[in-house]
Image 1 (cartoon, rainbow, N blue to C red):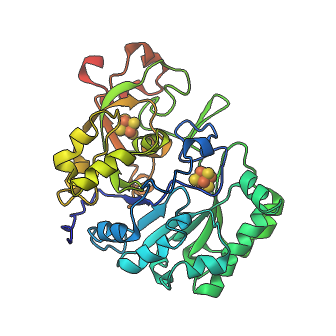
Image 2 (tube, rainbow, N blue to C red):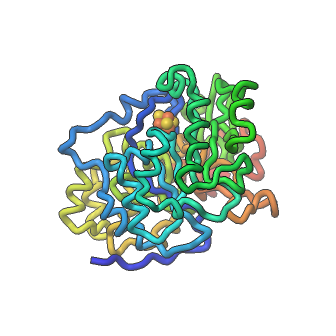
Length: 383
Ligand code: SF4
Ligand code: SF4
């Protein structure tokens, strides 16, 4: 059955398909770990093969074909490590089955020849005319030096550069390159002179802002006070209630659509919605009809399922009650540009989620930097 096409609102900023949460590396600061405690392997263990832990490439194709093609809105394939998905052949199969442009967030786990072969001749779907590279390769010093015998960065740069032999544009200028390397500016990560000498004149390299707490210091700028550090920073003993909605379409490995990164990651930390998926599949994925019952014993429930014929983008525009405020993931609540560069050009701050009616305890008011500005997000009784 072909699913009805979705109507994309202008406010939609990002489409992220988390193909798998499995990864070949085990970084101590893992983007998928809400607690950032370096428990990658225990948090997302490899499940028994009999358990269904991801959609098939055909299901992904069907689901993603609901999204109207837009040159300026690529679908980002991410994880975990998306190039591992479906025996490493899945990304190529999904690219073959859809019209879209894609961005790919990867740690380049296989050699360039295998990487290119696995794309099924669909390289052009990763070659959008954009100011930044579509293939964004992340550098993880500790793990890559372990796997590549102390030559982690040199090997990564060589792999990226070699993509020029397989139909990709590779240039040190990021607007001219399909591939670029990114490193999180974690206080423990250093950009050394040796690294600069390795990448210079070959591939683009950038650091990405580190978001979160390290040694008691909060990194990043957030619109909503204490949204990421309320609990981790010991500011308050309990998460707060609020209402929240998102401007992003975040789809987990089983096709569930989540309201924010915390909900998505946390639901997989606790084992993933595997039983719920089985139950929903038996109902032809009709989440709108059956989802509430199926997820009734779960604290965190998704917004919908992308294979549900009744799923609509307007489902994301509804403010939903959330009782997890204070454990939000930094990328959801940090101040940034939208895809129209709103912050840099007009001073309009954009965040991935919009939060209102936060039940902020008065006892925390004197710890808030700009209380007058922040209080517009608080519930009326707390003002
Ligand atoms: S490569 Fe990314 S997903 Fe994998 S362990 Fe490292 S941070 Fe996590
Ligand atoms: S308040 Fe935070 S945890 Fe709750 S839905 Fe919004 S971003 Fe997610």
